[in-house]
Image 1 (cartoon, helix red, strand yellow):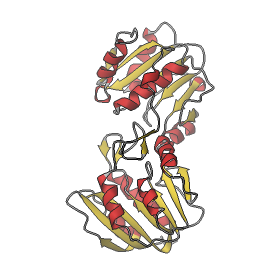
Image 2 (image 1 turned 135 degrees about the vertical axis):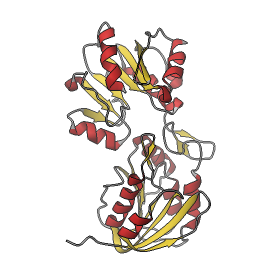
Image 3 (image 1 turned 60 degrees about the horizontal axis):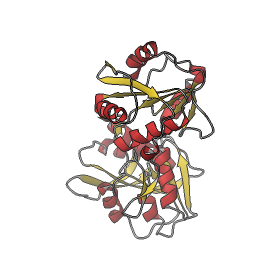
Length: 327
């Protein structure tokens, strides 16, 4: 983990650089105590990560502020190669001193080291805790690695690191087929991603659709994909987001991973919040991997749960009349 490797790298480097330090895409529980907190700027597209670090006293933002030069940048590698390259490119463009790269072997730390060595002088790596950390001088031109929202050949905008960046997620496609032709009122799309479900909802005579998404880049893509004035965009945690007024329906294809580990509690939190924000006669439309144990959570939060069959891989559910907790 970076908390094990970063102090070793800082000891081995000639100087950290005098000025602000950018840390790009750290994990929520990353140990950055070896850095001077008052100089550190955390960059993460995830509102949950930004919230955690902000509560710990750090400056945060979903992207590198364009008007800031950094003395040092630290890139925490992500599993999506194109996204990791884009992070390095962004760091290179705005860093006057060293750019430090850290990652687990499963994050592609070795392949990134090889790629960097083809175009820059890179330090010897420090290996510890199943990962590596190494550094190079900032300021080099890596513009060809820069990536952002781009038009997919399927006709929609996505970006590296966004869920289902290479095509329509089959679970979401299945849910779209199950949605009724007539839907009215205000609808919330929890975990909206780049907007596939919401785009279909907006073909109905609905009043408004709230796109609630924790990943800033995904929401940027959704803004490209949906220009309907009835679409309302929220960079927010879907497990706790509260609408201005209760909604008539919720649709969702909730994530079930935190980091790399399957965590059904995330989907259960989506279900609980869906029940909380729905009107008394509102309905939840949901798709999930068939093996995920959501039945108890659905029964706990809704009076009626209807199995819509789905297929061998995914289950479709309509849940009606949310239960209200008694005070």
